Amino acid sequence: MAIKVSSISETYGKDVFTNRGMFCGKVEDIECDLKRFKVRSLVVRAAKESYISKMLGSKKGVIIPFPMVESIGDVILIKHISLPVADEEPAKEGAASESE
Image (cartoon, rainbow, N blue to C red; front, side, top):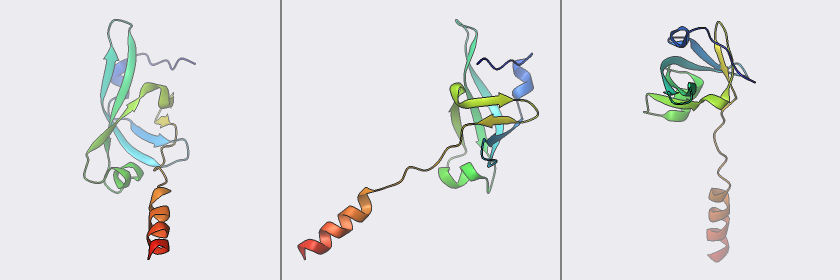
């Protein structure tokens, strides 16, 4: 489904939330494919103490591919982003204790 915006400049500075209501930050820039007249991605500056800034650590922002954008209105909704679960760490600890 295509998301319609009358002007690209309308998206600058809009708040970005996940579809679970977590605040990510504000749109800082937009990457466009000028040959196809399509938006490729949104550059989101992570707000301090936001959901996404906790994931990024010292990084200042993130590039969100446009297919992750669900809607654009007063705010921009994106698909929820979650941290990958590290299953390998407990397995390594268990293997070390077995060999001792």
